[in-house]
Length: 501
Image (tube, rainbow, N blue to C red; front, side):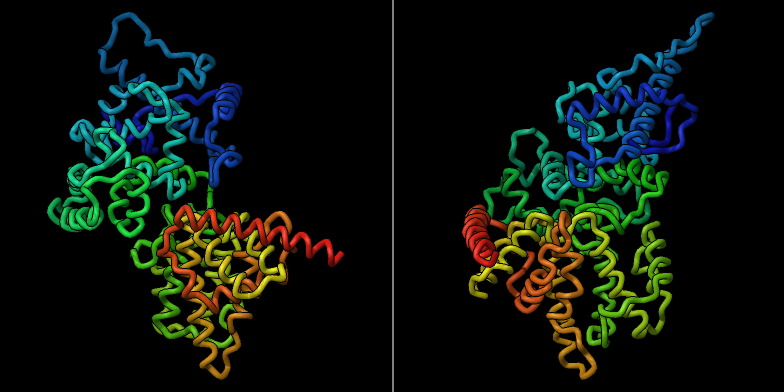
């Protein structure tokens, strides 16, 4: 008996399973937290309490289904009742899925995993790399892996892609290993999307990128080299997104069931890397809503629109669009209703960019970097030295944040330049700094901290946008130099504060 849903991907099963009792759930989740499981307290964008409850119920349901399939497959036993494992006896240690049973009975997108032994073997290896026996996957393993695939950092995702390509588990990947993996994935993808993409077409899109990735190397890479190089070859990183296709379905179903917003009010790494990212490939690490808004404002030469970013659209319109986008509609699709967009529509696009930044759970500059920039801006050092420090500290930002701001800041420079040419324009760098600093460059623990300094610093970033190129990769020496510079400046700032008092 087959269920047309992977055990980690919520589908419709043929049986109705009992849920765990509230007490059993509480006990398991307490064990989960004590064992270092992923939560919002331990990881950026980690699982919330209601999400963990939902995931646990789902995992337990799959656990029961596997038991049922095994019993049915072994044949009916006359005169004997099928024994059900008591719910009270389930613990974090005993709630595990066995590899042989899982892959034997599961079908994904009408494709049996038994037809892809090498691929399924590596999928399983990624699932239980946290320490469980190779033949089992625990709830702790699963939720950690699911987090990395759907919400994790850039480092999490590159590590997963690297391990997927590292067939022999040597700690190094070869060009041939990557080509073989891409070919296996192309067969799976072509069977899933029959009539849309065949194996030859898929390989033409990907294999050339493999050769480019290894250009200038000896044909092998370790994780550190791969993590740097893959930024410019994200189409290959996309090969590991088959993991999101398969395993991420449960996270998307969960968010739908729990009425979670898809785009606004999330962490940047969720929307810049996850299901809401830009799919055009033109703006890496930029969420689709921001990428499309920038695209349309440029396309219609709207950057010089008077009061752009200063005036917001009505709250009712903004909320309507926000609801649609949070449900999964792209801004690109929504905006197609406007055949001849005008200033009102341009204000809507600008409002969405502002609202996205303002709704982030952590400022785009991150709490740590924002505080450092504000302290430096409030110090009495020369302006040139301040700018030099900003250049260094910018490189220490997480990769998604660096690329997002490295797209936003130069775009705002375009706006400031266009406004300068327009007689009615007033949104220069200083005014744009006043608009964007409170939503991107602030200290969450005390929003009033740097209320004057942050807009000034942001305007300097706009005026010198060429220095904040997201393509630069932070080198260890640059990071250490930036840290040392900050320590010196912090001492100076502390001394000046005491003198002023």
